[in-house]
Image (cartoon, rainbow, N blue to C red; front, side):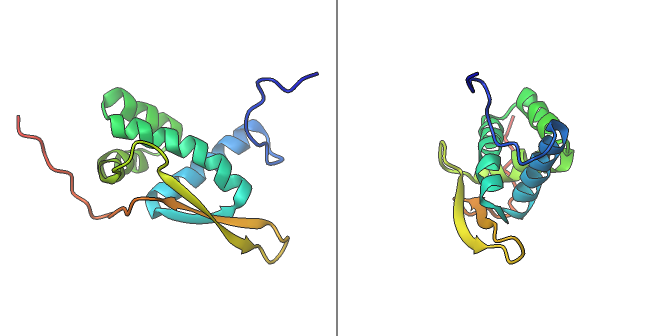
Length: 130
């Protein structure tokens, strides 16, 4: 047996639990701009979140609907499209992971994941003149 086509970490969870975990972490990151979790979860979450930010930067109704379906949270998806994406000035590498020591109970390695660019949550997008 070879391991072709097996992507991602399993975290000892079933598929639906793992998907729900990633959705929750991504929503928290988008709403708070920075979260601390285990290093493995942060590294895995970065893959999905950077793809969502790329879709948000492209804009458009189809991409907005894709983001809503992947996050399962309309408010967070709209916040990503309308507030976060216009403030990001780079083409890729939107997130930064920094090691944050070890958790006290089980000594799991922690990481803080945050946006590289400064995000102002009170940002108001400029309306385009038609």
